[in-house]
Image 1 (cartoon, one colour):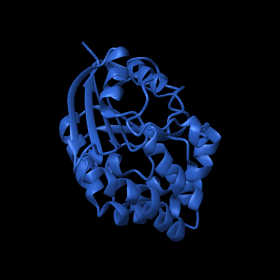
Image 2 (cartoon, one colour):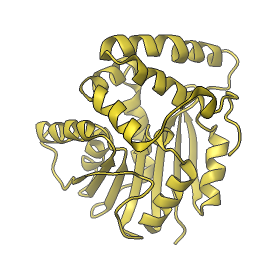
Image 3 (cartoon, helix red, strand yellow):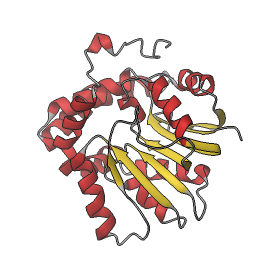
Image 4 (spheres, rainbow, N blue to C red):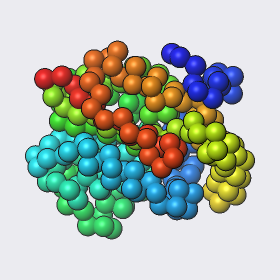
Length: 247
């Protein structure tokens, strides 16, 4: 894999992305996760999710896979758009419990079974899903190439896959300001509010070492996907990718 645009390697920062580590990390911050997300993104993440779902084009009757379903934001928004069935998979039991509560409290209609499991080895047959999506979860995969290959496997021919993920701006004005926020302010605020500094230091490092958009596109295309949309969001601090498995 090519060197990320920050020039940092995950190994150099000692990032541990083993499933048991990621599971424990998100279990520990599940209670404060939504509130901190809204505060630190100024709720702009809701707009990013909407953009992704607009282009994923979920239809009535679709079976949708929500990878790293977390507290269920993408699943809930998807269910409000179409009479679809959504299967969520995540490593964190506590995040999925929060998703179940949110689904019930908001009286969302539809089928939303949750599976605790590793997205690199999913317990689904080939060609099961019409659509797949992952919001802010692909950077937590220990092997991005294997993850993309697994999504390709479980999608039916003609199925679409949407990825929403944070990125590092390239603008010489925006970039240093964003890096200051990411490396100094975000870990401090997240750590103080959640009581878990390590979790937000991991968040920082996972963004710093994530492949640049053009590098991720190369991985997707190498695994057989056709890129339909590749759209920077909000001064390039986030990126939306939508791809299709050829019919």
